[in-house]
Image (cartoon, rainbow, N blue to C red; front, side):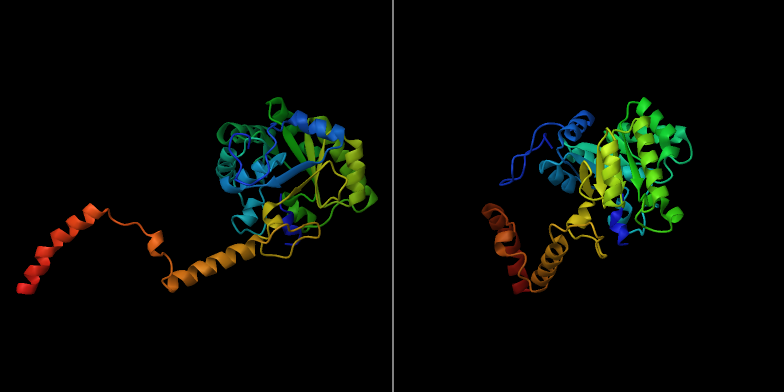
Length: 311
């Protein structure tokens, strides 16, 4: 997932002073119940242990190890370069942090496009080698077979329609999808095909609100929106967008909840100044020898000093 580019828990204690985290483990079934009850589903991306732990402690339903890490963690211009091995590595770190949320991982470009057998094998790797609880892949009816086979292998699958970043070159850039009646009809057919194939939910990215509303009303499974308006069953953002840790203008749908970039930059600049001024570390921030060791050291050095004075 990479809408940064549209504009180019349970098992650990919460930090002191934070709200108590809901203890119920999120499952595919509990997400279905949320849709039935009209309760919004919350999701954020995470790519490392620390961030994933904080997200999980905050009580979100889903944590997504998105292939957007290619951009926000590795500095690439698109999601296409990230590899299976890299996705597995990042997912392992997130897995150690997440106890309450359902952990979903993006299947990267090239990991399922070649054949159904390839897609199933790589989905199994994410579960066995990295601890993922579900996988996400992009595309419509053409992905139905591989989705069915992955589901047959007992692995939950999240679909992804609309602006699909792995189709960047075919779409001619990061553009809102489903703006015409034929395109709208295609999206609806694709959504129903993914539901029939066994997806437990579908991400709708970069589509008009009206289209997302229609698809959400038609499907029995939850929709998770990113740039798809407020009528989806849930929402997801790239956590770096939410925290202002990206280096481009935010997309229209991004709401920045904190300015971590300024916080980090100011802290690092202050640290540099303190080191250059020799005000860090202080005496209180330094370790010292025990008195008996210091006395023994001084006794050892005393004869040598006298010897050098007498010579």
